[in-house]
Each structure stands twice: as C-alpha cells, then as structure tokens.
Length: 179
Image 1 (cartoon, one colour):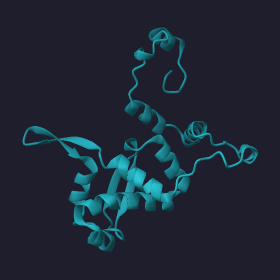
Image 2 (cartoon, helix red, strand yellow):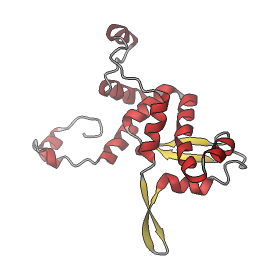
Image 3 (cartoon, one colour):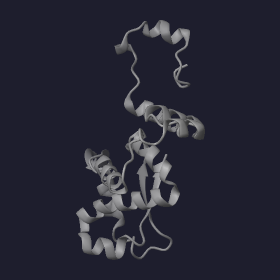
Image 4 (tube, one colour):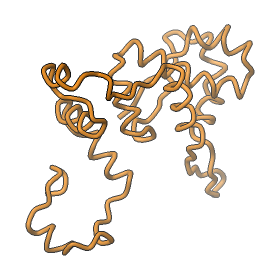
C-alpha cells in the first residue's frame, strides 16, 4: 500500500519499475505526510534531516551535524513560501487568480485592532514545506506562534505600512496553522 510508505506486490506490478508511472503529486505526498501520526512524522523528519531519533543516538552522533535555522530565517522563509501562493476564485461568473494570503490580509486588517476575541489569520500547512513544518513543531507552540505572526506581519506591512502594522496589528494578531 502506498499510504504506509511501502509498495505492495500489486503496486509493483502496476508500476513495473517505471518511474514515470508513479503519479503522486507533491500535494498528495504532502497530504500523506501531514496525516501521519506524531511519532511517525518525527521519525520521517529525523531520517530526512539526519537528526538522531533517540537521546542515546543524539549523544552518540552529536549536534554538530544538525543544520539549525535561526528565527529570522524561519520568518523570512515562511513569508517567501506563502506570499506567492495564488488561489482561484469566481467573481461575476469569471474565474480569477488572486494572492491567497494577501487577500486574507486585506479582508482582516481593519478588524484585527478592534476585534474581540482575536481574529485568526489562517495558514494552510499544505502551503509550507515539510522541513518548515518540522522546524515549527520543534520550536513549540508559543515560539512557533511568534514566528508565524512575524511572517504574516510582512504581508500586512506590504498592505498598510510598517507603522500601523506594528502599533495596531502585531499585538492583536493570532495566526493558526490549519491542517
């Protein structure tokens, strides 16, 4: 079965060694990865990033082989991953491509400073790379919220300017990573 990461005999017969027959898109692969249980996800990420799984393995291999990303790099990388994403919407019977996260920011920027409870800005996990999701998960909930908030703040800065963004939007912005 493909979903478990192993090919069955039927799958092997169907593909018969041809790489071009294996037609899983990036989105399908990302969806499969996101549906993995927490332990399996961490195991997959640790294998992909060369991070030891257990504490004894970590002591044996050391942390010098691990590539760490700084907060600033994470913020900028998230912004660069979500800013160019477009969505297809229908307006007056015509289909138009719009920038997904800029459109969301345009709808919310007036309400964020005054809304109670806080308005949520939603980022789809499928729009981020697996490495980025792993880095955010490694940071923990509070730190990842701060990183996501700063990344989304770049979008608001492009729309309304830095002065208004930092005074009014930053303190009331809440970002949710949607699976």
